[in-house]
Length: 275
Image (tube, rainbow, N blue to C red; front, side, top):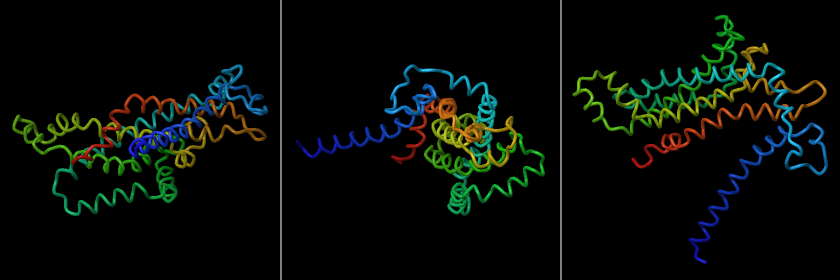
């Protein structure tokens, strides 16, 4: 057996192990969500719910105002994604096209802000949101989320815009477009992969964010999914079935988005590799 065949076989085995490691937690959460509470403490464990039940999902949508929490997360994540792309796209386009002095320093600053620990920003942002009277309101999350995800969007889009040739804008200008019209009508449509990649990453981050959501919201009506999940635990017991069902519900929107736009995401992440 040749070395090439062994290498290829080892690569596929490694890929299979990685996929299996990612799927096992999802499978187990789904299994628990459809199981009766008493079945979770049986020995040996049931690897498939026998019989399956939807009682855990009914409890999720009947208690703790979880449907409203899901709606809050959807609104916050969608608005954060929209605002970040609207503000970040022109900034990234300017950095990629104009001869900006200290461009590398600006990009390094954006990267530094993106990786700055969020715990160091909670206090000042909480004071600012409190003075604006936004605590327990969705803007108290949308504004900080936009500020935190904007550097990431600018970084990704700047690299993507740099792969597009300058002749595209030149042709649009010759046809009578203004620079801004050329940006909207030519560059933005051609940048769909980069925009989709940024949008998915921003949406997932905003959907999963916990620290700011916990600090900025204290009423059940204003909470998002991660905070609601953390507060599902009772005083004397942990409703594992209900928590698993709520986890399944919270994972589905992100999973659907990734499945629908996986090709665009891959195109955006790999853009410029061959340049």
